[in-house]
Image (cartoon, rainbow, N blue to C red):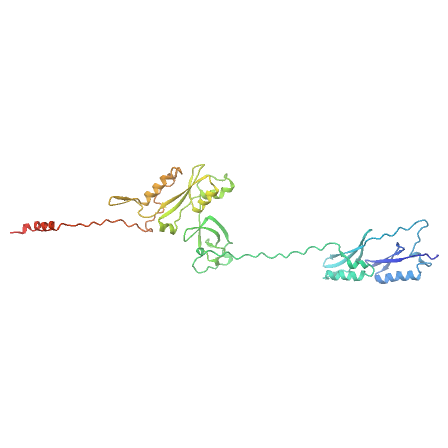
Length: 399
């Protein structure tokens, strides 16, 4: 066979499992894929073998038909186009092992050109560097390869929630008793009480805020026993009013509290002043009247304006009954309270039937007594009248 003129001769190789495939090009046209055993050859030695064969045959001499097939007469080989070739890689997993796969991507599509060994614990950077060193002689552009599949974003580190320390209790809610200690198994997690649920046991004042319940069914202000909060008393409320399930949802809980049974507790300040404040509400739809606390009274005026609200000064001092001194009548607490209630009939009809005990909350034994007024009278005698009385007294003694 005559020598065939070839202007350019190139080849590329790829490792496909246990076989090295060398693709041979002449004048830009692929003419042959040659296979070499990966056991006997490396990529470099396989390409060297092709190169040696081409040189031995001069690519122009007899016997080169295995490397070059002449174009048929009258057929013009396709013009070679310049295409942009990029290289990408993926890090894949096989059980506990990892390996790298490299791809050549051009206008004709995507082709896998390398698959690394499966290794355990190999850092990604090491796999990438090994692939670049082995491929850059044949694929110079591989040094700029990028990841085919973007790396998943790092999993954000979730910090455990930090429980803020309990807010300090106001001094008036702390007890002077020795600090309490209870293991967590002996008390329930702190809850928040709303107005009307608890009162302070010692002062009978309403309590709103955090509280804990112990295994003995005791209640204390605060979030932990170590806060040494005062002891609380649960307010048991019952309602004798009609079913309120049909009332508007926004006012349901407040309405229920306003219409629940309520027992007034005197504060020390009220005892000192001798006058307590009582708070009454009337539902204008059914004219039902109930007594409530100051807190619920103030909240109700804002949120349920359809009620009638009345604040009543209530006398609790001695004398409870009327007292007459030197013909002058001094009104006692009972009369004053009765007069107050009767005067409210015009603004809150039915109040005099709802409030009938006008001595309620008056406790004479514990309240300072009002000193009864005393009138002192001084008698002045005529001196002459005194002598006359003396003579009369001794008249019968003359002999």
